[in-house]
Amino acid sequence: MAMKRGRPSNKRPVVEPIRRKCQAPGCGKIRLVVYKEWKIPPRTQYGGPQTPREGQTRLDIPGAEVNYYCCYPNLDDGTFPCEHDA
View 1 (spheres, rainbow, N blue to C red):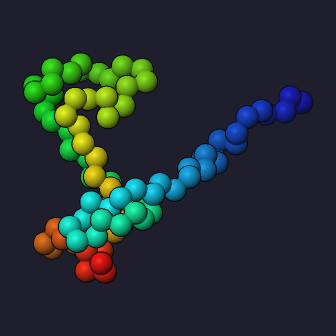
View 2: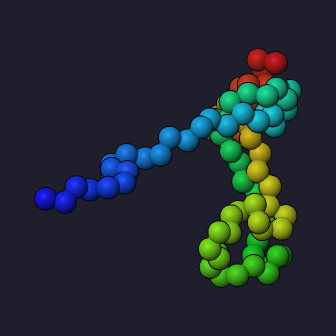
């Protein structure tokens, strides 16, 4: 009987945690990232393709921004509780 090779189908790769500067107002510390906020302009602004090319990421889009936060936003008012810890 042939033996299966490679990674088991039910196991995901281990991703190393990311540490970035928190973008929350009043925090600004370098901490472990738990929440990312992507801002991507409309397709009509940058004239991008309908389907992404192989190897293309969201950061390859001109005008795309990502904000890193060390805490989750409050759903009520949109503020971040990590700004009060500073």
